[in-house]
Image (spheres, helix red, strand yellow):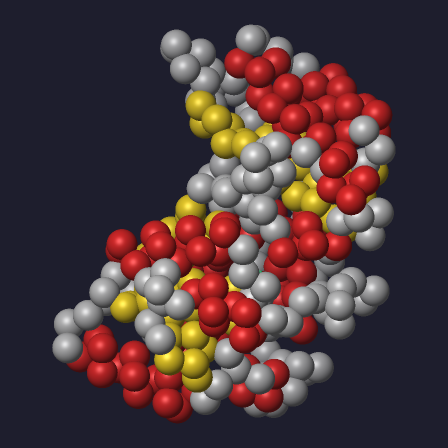
Length: 289
Ligand code: PAF
């Protein structure tokens, strides 16, 4: 496995691979890798002959007062964890390589408002512009055939799919299932911020989403009541809910009637940690929304 910081060297290696007929999968990350990331890398290795993992803490997607400075940077450990898991190359550029003109006035990729003025985008203004911009840049730099993302960041995945479509990137975007701890908590680099007592309470988010899914499966259709019950459960467990929301997976709009595929998404604050999670589900036995 090679580690590269330099864009020109990266382009050379990837071009050689593709010229010899090998497909390249990209797994974009911000490092501090956990088993969830490793599952993305393993999926990438099944889908392509070569796997590039990028490690870059992207300043553009952090708002003022968010954890850009505190975000754990653990490149050596990350490389150790990746070794033998199917990655061929780790691309870890510096900020200057990613933003040669500086970050302040950099050209940005702005996703459609309908996808970002909602859910996490409402409490993190500019976040998805930062994500779409850096992922578009990574697509330009690496030129992957496939790109692999986690479904935990469900809104991010839909923003990236739409960005790739709208900007004509010849990249197949693939979403991998959420990897959970034994008690249901979705794996996330930010779980490292949780104090022991918070860590014990954190699975309440997944539980509250699960209760809502079961209620819908059993015929519950009063969205406001279902969502407010989930918020009350979160508050009961000592979490500060940001949102709990039932949506259509493809465009993140509220269900309008007739849908069979749904997703419930939630975000809550626990101390200084912001947790997000979601459950995608299908109404079976001829049922629909
Ligand atoms: O999900 C992440 O870790 C980041 O948002 C991503 C996709 C690597 C872009 O910086």
